[in-house]
Length: 187
Image (cartoon, rainbow, N blue to C red; front, side, top):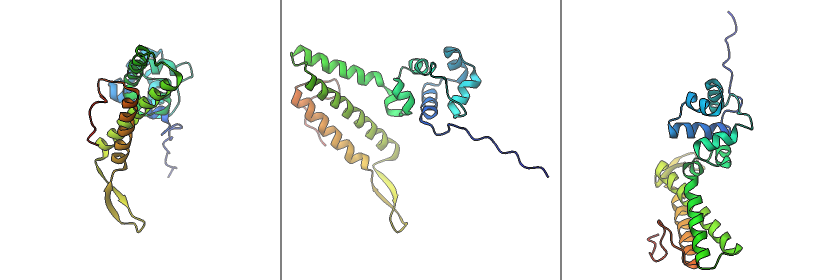
């Protein structure tokens, strides 16, 4: 009998780029043919990028990011949260910068506070996505090897990030469509 043929393993499988590309294509319902046509590539090449058998050339990366409306960092990191709505974070930051400017408080230190606030807002979304996906309770394995249910740490982190976000908004006297400083948090 002859030796069994081994299936070639993807060279970049599990790489953040192919994971990010696969997530974006799935989320937007984009097939290989459509993306290939938009990028001037072959459908076969796009399938190889998506599965991790190869990587796109460096000149294709910005085109892929623009096609999906995400940052290059998002595409390269494979981070689903950032890829979901990067424009929402940019819009929030621009709105808050404008409020600082209107109040003649547009300084580097206060802009840094706004940047921190937007980062916290992103972390809140990340924790909420984790809770939505895994629930408030998760299964863990004890040091004795027994399974047990415990609180999802994302719940505690979500509360912490939310409190920090509200504190910054109150301190700077800013308002947003989704976060209002005059409301007391139930957290």
